[in-house]
Amino acid sequence: MNSKIEVAIVGGGPAGCTLAALLAQRGIRTVVFDDDKRPDLLVGESLLPTVVGLMRRLGIEERVAAFSQHKPGVGFLARDGSRLDFLFPQRAIKGMPNYAYNIPRPEYDNLLRTRAEELGVTFVKRRAELETGGEGREVQLTAACLASVPELGGTHPKLLVDSTGRARVFSKLLGIGAARGKRNDVAYFAHFEDFDSEAQREGQVVITTLQHGWSWRIPLPERLSVGVVVDKSAVKDRGETAEERLEATIDAEPALAAAGKGRRRVTPVMTYTNYQLISERGHGPGWVSMGDAFGFVDPMLSPGLFMAMHSAELLDDRVFAGGAGILDQPVRLAKAFDRIFTELRDWHEAWGEVIEYFYDGRMYALHAAGEQLCEKYGERALPRLMQKHLTSQITRLLSGVATRSRYGRNLLRFAVTHLVWDVAPAEDYAIRA
Ligand SMILES: Cc1cc2nc3c(=O)[nH]c(=O)nc-3n(C[C@H](O)[C@H](O)[C@H](O)COP(=O)(O)OP(=O)(O)OC[C@H]3O[C@@H](n4cnc5c(N)ncnc54)[C@H](O)[C@@H]3O)c2cc1C
Image (cartoon, rainbow, N blue to C red; front, side, top):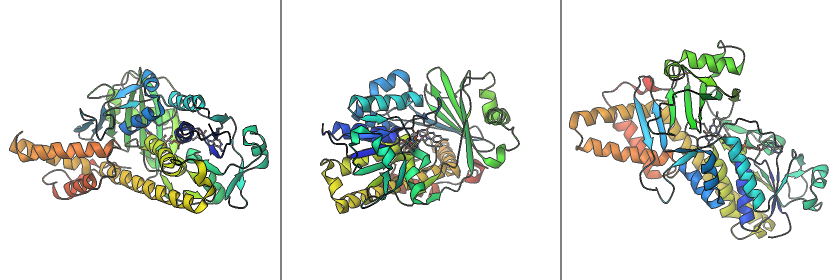
């Protein structure tokens, strides 16, 4: 392994640890600053099959499987009780695994860190202090911070990576704005026992459209993660504390109240707000951002950890495949970053597009129209074949395997526009504030 540390990563979550481990596999040494402020409970528990591909690349799948729940797919329950089930297909899609995992998040993050350490990554347990930089560096570590890491030998690393998640430390320091999502949601969640998941298959994640907002139910070993995502205005009269608001929302929503009748909450309640944003700029001289520090669209389809880990993979593949020499070629480096962020923006756009079909109700209306046609023309007729093909394309979009596929996206656009008739309007299925 190269003895000189030329890359410093700020933030040891999934994005930061994945990049550190991938670079270590190439023999490029990094240092990771992490403030170690991880709470005992964290969102990001439901993963996509594409994350399993990354676990394999890091050599950790077996260890993840030992503490996680196998996830065969996701189901969506509409307010009228109808359901849409997307089970990952029997065969692997494009070489990607046809299953995923639901993970206890702190254990997962700890494992990523352990793996990076096994590969030789240096972790510094402290908050990285940063300042605007000098020649060729838009951001740099403060002198005190630099001096606190003997491995850096008093020399500024050539590249600083912002993987601080929603703290967006570099963007805040540099005053970089962000495009914010249109929703004004708050999410409350906790782990429960004796709460019915209503999964069709063990481990299936269930997303339910509520009278106000929506909820997730993520089966974990011996417990169920239950989260509600609601417009802030809907919960202001439901108590003062997060605990009161989560419990009151479950009780007020018929679909959840029935499933959680005998529930027992076994963790505190966590709260998340203002999480939909994409930075206007993701890199500059001497620095680059990854994962949530660059952007995050919405939790409904669980794209977060995949996007965090995949952004690390993109950096590794596109920038470091030829070694760390590119760090001495600023023009080439900036071009490589530009290409990566064009791709990341396209990913976010693609996720935003498919998520919107669930929010605005068109996905449910399409399903209702398909069912109606199949009933009318029978199992063997063209509508059933079309519905099967559409379901398989949608599953590919949802699994991360083909989320950006032009064919899948165009097919879905066509279907929601031209193949829906004689059913309740999409607004009836939409997520309401
Ligand atoms: C309500 C909600 C539900 C979600 N559900 C899911 C889901 O089911 N599945 C999914 O895949 N994703 C989900 N997500 C998204 C997911 O949690 C994030 O996308 C993911 O955690 C991003 O990883 P990251 O490494 O970019 O950032 P983070 O996980 O936030 O890691 C950042 C790290 O940086 C550290 N740090 C911050 N500042 C500093 C500093 N100055 N110095 C040193 N260290 C610092 C932090 O302590 C932390 O360890 C959800 C998000 C929300 C809001």
